[in-house]
Image 1 (cartoon, rainbow, N blue to C red):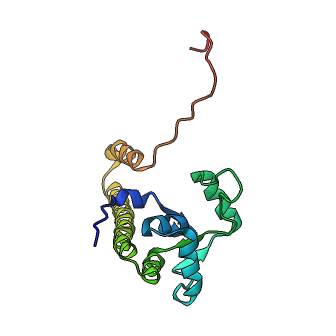
Image 2 (image 1 turned 120 degrees about the vertical axis):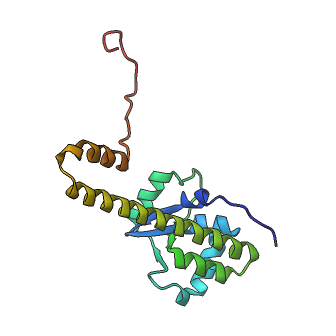
Length: 174
């Protein structure tokens, strides 16, 4: 059996947070499992009883449009994009998809997918634990440490994106 060495970070980038669930889209999962999206969805429809709502759901048109604009998946030309709304698979749904495909690559890739979901879960938990510990320490110590706690909170919050204006600056503006 071939050994596919896929970095977990590669798979993490294909996991999205939709409807308060961490999911992978059908086209990303199909690519990892080495099948076409059409083939994956065909097998899912044939085995739909294996995919309850907490394993898989169909994206609403607005969700699909929003994702498409964020990740720029729309290709130009006739027949270049799917006319069906994509499926979103949770961790359990991704594993179930590997079992219905029943190929060595799908089975091996499902291990990488599970590892990526687990790593994301651990990161979220550790981030929440750290935030909670800092808040507890903040209550415990007096105001002299307020500056330190504010600095830590700033480091933990996601950085704000710097938006650069398009165009040239005149000598006066510089």
